[in-house]
Length: 448
Image 1: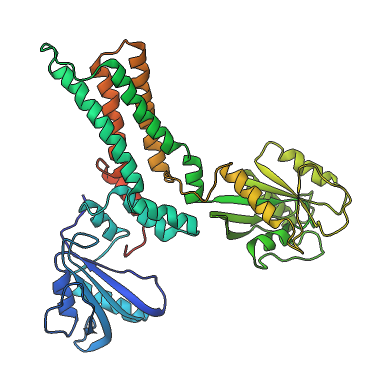
Image 2: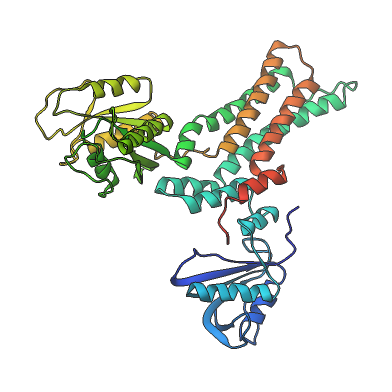
């Protein structure tokens, strides 16, 4: 059982040294605690930034000048009294303020506990709570925009509209069951079929771009593969925009996996450079080749690099054959040099001049996201939401199929339709177990 009747405190800004740090307090004793910690004698005015001095944990003397803002319940993030103290960003100083708040009666907050209290207090639903974590974790502008849309309630609104239609249908069917002998007829089979189809179509519209939504939220791993000295590391550096991988004319320079997060048209891509694929004899190089093979096995997309300025080798042909059934892009590197061969369907690229890099980025996005525009915000991004809506769609489809066959009475239709409504409730958190809530909020940062 979650405890919400005590007062919690945490540092709301990241650990480390900075210009400012914010200590957040929430709970029934928040206002008493800030009065105990500060030297101000007159009451704090609600929602007004107040300059005051703050005391330490074991010393009555002031340790810093701070800005304190008090937010009385219920119009706060958590729905409780909330105080935010902005102090100078010394880690020692901020820890002292937190410790003083604990000594004054607060408890150290757990991960996500402020947002959990906002959810339990009805300030936000579970979709919006998860969007808070996604917004904090966003690594690309598109991820941030999608998370903010969900925080604003766009997905909640679409699910609420579907649930309202389904609720009305369920109510009419139940009314038919409640008055079987009176001759009341609240809905006929044709309208029932039409209403079920409309809800099913609405869910289908949400699920249509679920794959792209997961890609936007979770990102993808793109692995560069090729034999030694074909230009993988140069291409890696060009895509990363920094000299992350060592580039020399000596084959086998890269002996371990090198990773770099990059933003490719809104998609958070983890780019991986690997050791050259060949029959290595050196024990260290052999381990690097093995790690490269493992990286290829788990990649979302392979970029197979061949050297256009040299004839295809046996190692090239072996790698092309090995990856032929995988999602891949073939790149012909060193396009600024005279061509020894022109491979079919390969993208010609020069890491030296930058030629072909934009075309390669477009190809990566197309392979990962399909033909759809990845810059359009998908409604569904979270696997939990996708799974629950897919279950609801299956239940509604089963009810529709049974109705079409004309062999099922209303009570059997109601069972599937009510179960579908339960899945809607689980998405927004109207019906959610403590285990699910723990699993969601334990991924939050402390102080949020």
